[in-house]
Image (cartoon, rainbow, N blue to C red; front, top):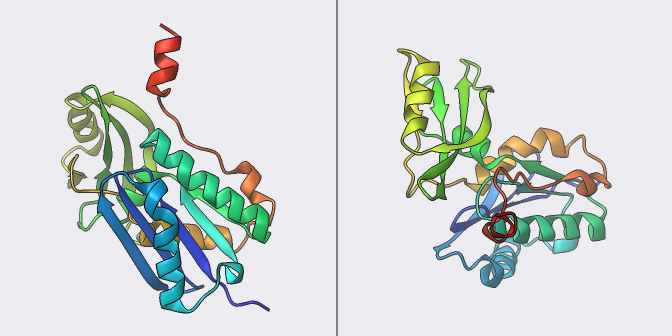
Length: 214
C-alpha cells in the first residue's frame, strides 16, 4: 500500500500558499510573495516542496485545492492544476472553501469567526462560522458578497455578546497547511474520479462577464 502523500494548493489570494503532508502531519510548506504571480511561481514552488521532502510528483496520492471565493484568475489556475494532477495521476482531488480555511486557521480563542475577503468596489466575500469546544467548525451564515461596512454589523448581530473574530482585509489569507488539514479526511475517502466534481465557488461573476450583462 502506498504511503499517503498529499499536496495542497491555495491560489485564491494574492499570496501563493502550498503545503505537502501525509496522513497525520504537514511535511513542508511554501509561501510565495504578495504579488499575484501564481502562474509564474506555482510550478517552481511545488518543485521546491517536493525536492525538500524528496518526493516525486508521481508519488502524490491526493491533491487539495481552494475553490474560492477570491481571485477569479487565481482560483482557475489552482483548480486547473489540481484537476490535471488528479486526472493524470489517478488520485483523489478535494476542493475546500477559502473562507472556511481562513476560519479554521484563525489564531484566536473567539467562538465566532467571520473571515472576509476583499471583493473590491466596497464589498467583501464573507461567511460566518461557529467553533465548538471540540474544534469543529459549523457554518452559520452562507458565503455571500456584502458591503464591507454592513458585514461587521451582520456578523455581530448573529454572534450576540459572544467573542467574535473578524479577519482584517489585508494581511490575512488562507494557508495551504490549514487547507490540507481540512481536506485530509475527505482525501482518504474520495476516489480517482473526484477531480470531475471539484468546481470553483464563484459568488460574483467576473468583471468581464458583468460588463457583458449590463
